[in-house]
Amino acid sequence: MRVMGYCRVSTNEQATEGMSLDAQESRIRAWADAMDHEVVEMVTDEGVSGTKLLSDRPNGMKVAELLDARKPSVEAVVVVRMDRLGRDAAEQIALLKRFRVGKVGVVAIAQQIDLATPHGRAMAQIGAVFAELERALIAERTVEALDELRRQGKAWNHAPFGWGVHDGHLVPVPEEQETVELILWLREAGWSYDRIAKRLTADGHRTKRGGPWQAMSVRSVERTASRMMSSSL
Image (cartoon, rainbow, N blue to C red):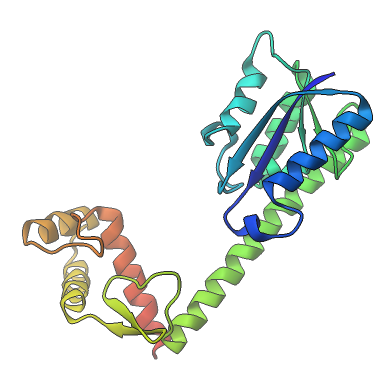
């Protein structure tokens, strides 16, 4: 059987043992050798979250295109686990249905998924649900960790607008704090994010990176400022 291997790592998973691109590729090739199949192409996405649609990924789109091809170049797509294709349960289940009825099959080595049997399809769908649950729990723990860092006044990743970093702690930047106060005041006055962004840009205020303001940037600053104030209470 001619197969395409697909490997993906998100930024956090790149340093996790057993989840690297090389480890995934080695496992796929070892499986193909054992089953006497030919890997005609190995497709990889590095630093791409599983929450991103397969068709929107730089190389994952090649897998998505196979499902629509009238004469696909391979007979199956091989992954180490189904969550490499995606962590969203709805998308995973939709993909499984397309693989099951289309011209291209799918093999998940670690889960031994066999879409030709009702039991195999059920196990694949259950796995998709738990993958989405895992993602939700990770997101929840991340929010809790960031809230704790804010409460302690410590820096995380990069300093938010209005703040700088000194000795690992957040310190207010006076010029940026004035802009934050203006944003909060205008929001209290009922201004939209887009209107505030245009006002800030017109008045010469600049974002953290020195660029013009966008509605989403204003929204982000407002939300961060609200969290910072609530965590200091």
